[in-house]
Length: 291
Length: 279
Image (cartoon, chains in turn brown, green):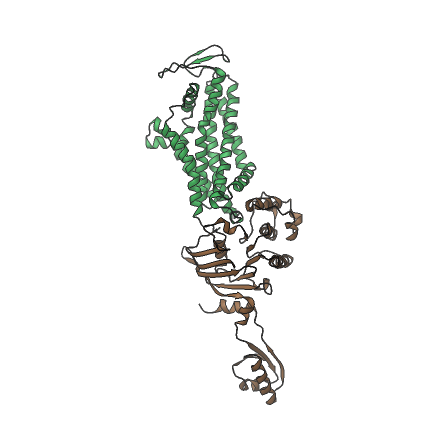
């Protein structure tokens, strides 16, 4: 069952094309990283899901309901779209109460503690720092225990402590069984956290799926440190040099063969290890690939 | 309509602490008291009451237009609309909830205008408002003997009460003002721009009959005209109330008034429904 489905989303703002047929599938119960550089179309996609922006073409569904036709589609979903902003005359408690009223759920008086700003309960949001507003925005999104949280760069403006809190909350919500769709452009913030990811480039999803499968799709590589690079290089196939390091395409069998060949030629092998590619590498490959 | 009730309650709370709403209330009360009291004919409370209302109602109209213009556009300027709409609140519910809240504000300002105008007029006492009156002020029997040959008899207190009631004829004008403000507010994303545009639209509408060369009868079909034709309406409506029959106030005027008062918020909601929120 899919929590989010986007099919062929296209959106143009005047001459600027934001989405060029974006397809996205977010399975239920996943912590889904929505990755892409600035201007790739992440925010526009999330705005379409929140029904703030109408796509020119294509459909967007939450739990199988078209977001344009059913307000019910968003009833199990909470959103934090870009920077959180609130009426400056309302206190944090007012904001949470009003949010609960809009959502027709119970006001959660403990949620401010969860996001780390319990002391701000009776302060007007007009005096909040950017980071505090983001935390309050997250608190609003956590109320009512939603089945799906859609968070657009929730880490914006947060200090390291806040970033850690966000990571903890995302993990807790995921553990609770909620689906979390979080858009980021700094991969370090979700690395190791996401179960699934999609990489958006130029208004399209370049790659998406389970993180393990995204990483597994890549060709295996080996890193090799030897005492004589110049002598070793001609003995190896599909190898390239980067300073004192040799990178070699291949798997474990290739590693064994290379080790045997090099030691047989009297070359000392200091290190021979598979290169573990990260989501960051895949992301950069996609972003830097020629259009 | 999902979210209309929540939107109504939130907007009503915001209006209760909106400086412009309070300034409007103060201006309406002051306009009624000061301008009404300056009316040269001081010996008749009805005349003073009418003069005070004719100052208070247009004042209320312009404040209502400005406050309504800020409503949706203000949420978009601040970016708070991104917090409200995905909660989930239907866009139509969001706009109509605001429309109802501003209608309440219109009613409050009207009551304030009537109250302060009445208080001002009370100083001079309510005397002769029609062609013939017998008896002293409180026990007087008013006798209409004008061309329509209606000859009801009722006391001065009845006349006062019914005249007060007739003042609610100004309500369509006030609701139209909120409708204009709301409509502009859903079209423009800047609250300052929306206020200027809404006032710029409202001001000429008040003088539209002169521009179009309409007869007095047709001019009354324009709801905003209720503010300037107010005196006639009060007299006419008050008199017909006295006969316990519905007035021959033009049916087209009622039709236009109701149509515009209901239609403007619906149009605003429909326009907002199609709009992208990109702020």
